[in-house]
Length: 425
Image 1 (cartoon, rainbow, N blue to C red):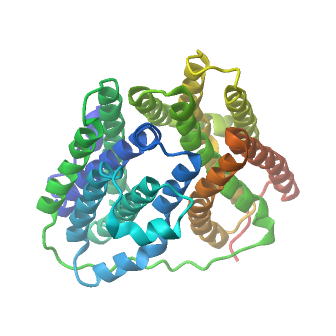
Image 2: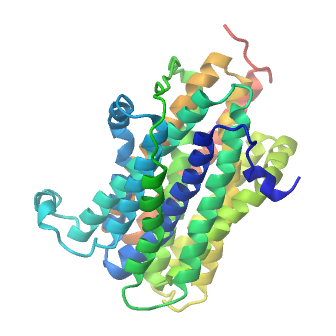
Image 3: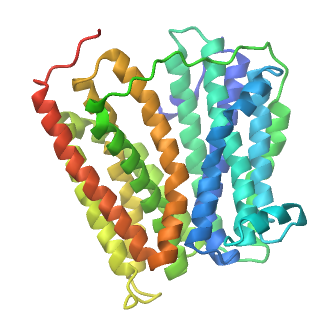
């Protein structure tokens, strides 16, 4: 089977599905390009600090609260048309980001409300929110469209193929930022964000075709919260928090202290995604061979070491032009390999959870990750304000230590269960 077979659809496949796949490529391309460049743009161009950047990240994730907006839209327009509109919205948010370095009188009341936050950070937060709202609900609407437009026996295959388009779009976005990032010229970010955002606007509008209306999916899952899943809840929230601190604050630290160029930052994300893509099968084999408990423990031990290196690099005796900046760059790229084992958290509860409880906890898992994306960025920014990056990365060590401790406890619970999956009932 060739690599490109993942991107081929059968001739009889509904045209709406093919359009959704192409739009998925564009949406992920835009989101990846924005994420990979946000640290450099914030620190180098807008002179934002870690608190400002944390505010931007938190605002970026608040979009999950406004899902009712998309539900209202789906009452009037079809999912296939909505996909194109959302991609166009994402492109608009990306292009507007280039204008974040100008105070806008329209946002004057927000500047006064958030008096301790830089006005440029508030601009970035607004545009990031628009982008996040578009991407977040693009994925939901796309999956809903697929489930309503395909035979149930083919749904998994179609979603898998669309996932391949998404991964390719993400890689393309990181690659564009990496290549352009090694060049320097006037109005660089205007060119970058127009290059990334304009195709989304044009193709999104062109792809927004009128189609038969389809009902939005309804989650018919009973939420089951049990005390025996306390370790699962803690590990889910804290692991998501670790990823935010390491990937975003770690990368922001590279730009803030070492003045690392955009090309290198793009390279971090490109290597990160490449390692995740090519090593995910090997990671699954390791989890099967060694067990979830061992892989979780090793994952958190390695994370503690990574954070310890970051704390050392934050020390004054590490100069801006020190070779340690390349050590941190490699460390952040390698961190992607540890996230491959995060699936252990979800798979491990199958040993002592009924099928109903597993379905419920899958939803709780998603909500806890969303909650961490809202809380941790601004928390990290406040910690930076108090004790610089020492506090941010020290907080990461505390979270990793808590996860390591809970990994031992969840192993004990597994032994107490008799190593038998729970029955439905």
